[in-house]
Length: 235
Image 1 (cartoon, rainbow, N blue to C red):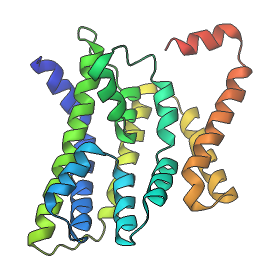
Image 2: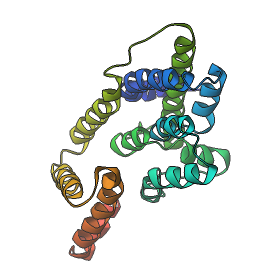
Image 3: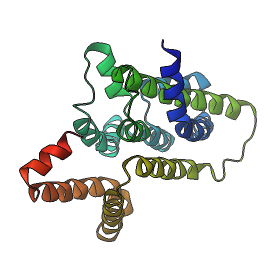
């Protein structure tokens, strides 16, 4: 492994590190309260690897939800990843297990990094994307494991840990703005979010925001000249 490439990827994922570790610890503690061995928290973080989905699973398991209820709820919650994947088709220029792992490890935070950070010019971009994905994955597994072990041995007050994820999103949004230096996407995202909260329930806000954003982007793209659309598509 190229040491300089690893260090570059690690520096890029530091904000995620400081978000995933405490958030994973919070999940591990909550998961431990269900009475499962800490190993299952590690296994869940490794194989499922879906922060919001895992927190939701804790509530579903606590209420003895059925398999169909769990499947439908998880599908609706993670449906946003369909749109993430479509936008990254041209970035994932690889096949086999490498492409499979990039798809599997595509979380909200990883997507933000992959779309907001350019790989080093003299390095293979697929290796860079794989390192970012694997590092973020390892942070989540480590945090979840620590939380489950700590929860099984000591009593911890988790008040305030639920703000970790929103804070992480804010940091990543600021980093993306520094990269693209364009305010319109962020203004549009804020407007769509407020409109979704106003028109729909908070439970459906995320999915509706994604759908409205796609509609707005399609309308704006349709109004562009062909040369402008080609230029933007090549960025």
